[in-house]
Length: 125
Image (cartoon, rainbow, N blue to C red; front, side, top):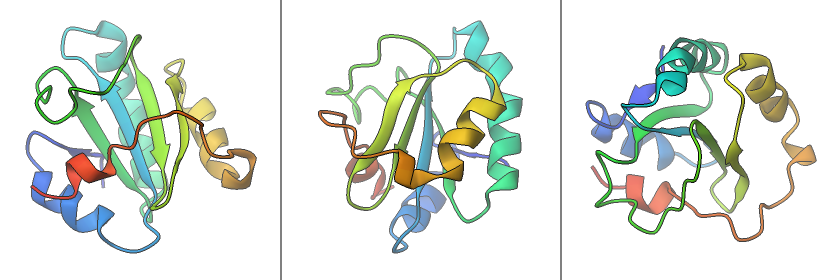
């Protein structure tokens, strides 16, 4: 299943992240960003490879009302969040192997101090 899109799948996103122990993997992007558009297929392939995780594609400019406190400086920005803390928050090169490596060993990703949590903004449709 490809990544969920907040524009069309808000109910499903809320349902998935309310499941205990579901890891949230969000790609924070902008429609105008060519690199983000190129990364979309790769991100969908990662979602297919990790169906136990909730992959969400979020255009933060379209959803600025939900994410007004979110400070994204470059695109695409990847956020990996468990039900307790944010594990990773940063710009990634648009290569699936990088994100896949981050997801392969979450113990290598300690809490990202000062990183935002987007789960509360997604918990309700």
